[in-house]
Length: 167
Image 1 (cartoon, rainbow, N blue to C red):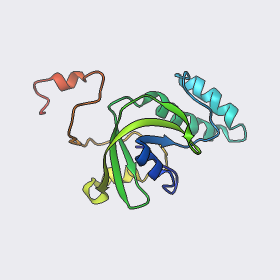
Image 2: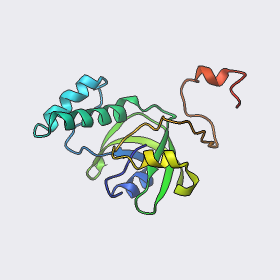
Image 3: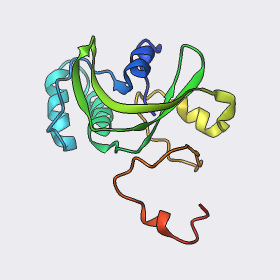
Image 4: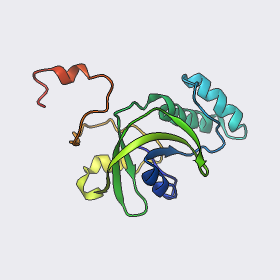
């Protein structure tokens, strides 16, 4: 799950340009900073006035966004402008961009649906979508999301080859 600003102010840019976005505008390009420790060093230099707790939080979100999201992952973007959820798949690696105003940290996304009603989502998943974090993994309680098209994953899960997988 990613957010597009506290009040959804970056939603339209994300959807129009086919990207997932994350704030932290004072943070420079994270390309080549693959470890959490390297990202922490950049965050400390970028936000010296913030508390250690805040910097740990920033580091976790930025590291996950730049280095842990994989091509083929499903992205959920809770939309503030119309109370729906946009769903897409990640199509490329982290990119630092200068052409989107104050938005710099992006991941290319193919938006498959931009209008999923919140009522179509299970209540416990909705609670996760309402969390405070800008970026969060939705991994408690399992939901199967059926999407059309070929998988964007580079490698297949060993579980997907199982004859008992139920797929």
